[in-house]
Image (spheres, rainbow, N blue to C red):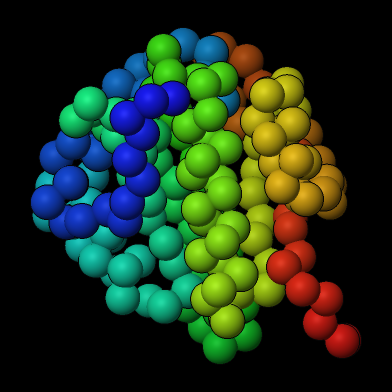
Amino acid sequence: MQNLILRQAQPEDAVRIIAYMQALAAEPNIGIGLSEGEFTQTEEQEARFIEDLAQSGNSLFLVAEADGKLIGLLTLQGGKRRSDRHAAYLGITVANGCRNQGVGKALMQAAMEWARASGTLKRIGLRVYTDNQPAIHLYENFGFKVEGQNKLALYRDNRFHDVLLMALLLEEVPG
């Protein structure tokens, strides 16, 4: 996609992120675990969330923009305890009309480079609907492997969905 800008989220982005997430949650047949009306963060809460991730040292919040419009988000949320600071959970979304144009790939590339350079993260996990083949393909292209499956894990669009549990080990750690 031309004019694509990737950058770290800033607290000033909170209002735009909230509107983006609310629109996404209202979209039918989208592979996220939120339904319409369920993204209820206030501007203050979202700004604090952005600040907390930025200050954690093992988390990242990226925004993708094109022509001044927010078109994608990626979060890596690292663990908060000593026992799980090495592990992060990935969430990624791309706006309707911008999918299959390289936005997700660009976000993933930037996040994987950041994670490898962090010196802290060893593992990145995620959950994805079993029928979201484009997302599964993207994750597999970055080296993510299926570790399991949760049956009836989410209820959205008047039906239950199974999810795959996938993970990427950034480096093998002797056990």
